[in-house]
Amino acid sequence: MSDTYSMSLLVALGLGLVATGAVAGVLAGLLGVGGGIVIVPVLFWLFGWLGVPEAVAMHVAVATSLATIIPTSISSARSHHRKGAIDADLLKSWAPLIFVGALAGGLLSKVIASSGLTLIFGVIALLVSINMALPKKIVLGDDLPQGPVARGLVPGFIGVFSALMGIGGGTLSVPTLTAFSFPVHRAVGTAAAFGLVIAVPAALGFVWSGWGVPLRPPYSLGYVSVPAAVLIFSASVFTAPVGSRIAHSLNPARLKLAFAAFLFLSALKMLWSALG
Image (cartoon, rainbow, N blue to C red; front, side, top):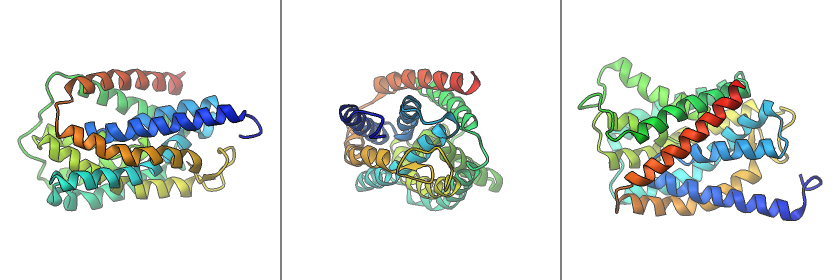
């Protein structure tokens, strides 16, 4: 990269990645959506702009996002834990199934084309944006599913698709939990802990599936772009607690609506890329 781009451009790219990490960290703590929902589209467009081949660009974006979620989720979860916002019983019940699902998602990346990952991200992000924009949250029941099949499928689904999208637990688990009348602050706090359970096995799966694959950016570990990951989480790890503190002091309804609009447009752009 240093042979192709000027030093000033590389510095600008670095600052852009740090800014992305800062915004992603705040959103992870504030909205419980997971910073990956911001990081993945930014990295996907950035890698495409830098000339990373389309065949690997989405894999690298997803894998790098997962790597950044590891320190961010630790920071965010610690902040929520100090406020008593993590449900220990739910964490113990769902974490093993989410872990297995996330590992499966990471390993599946070896056989899913970049356009397939882009399509998965676009479809689910579109649904999430619509859900966030609704004036009233969807309520499916007064309690979490109790049947053995449902109790296994729900966290497993969250693990698999969070891994394939490069996101933490919040984007899928918070709307799922609140749909079953789970208190929103405890949903956001517990989702922060789910982020770590997702990111570690999923990132390892992407490292394995991308090992030795050609055309990846320089200094990549499997599909994980180490320089991009370091720059992003160097900011997000500090800003996630800021978002967490804000989440406990205000009603972020307007911010959610603005973010839903951003996510909606991002999803449409990624769907166009996948289907075009």
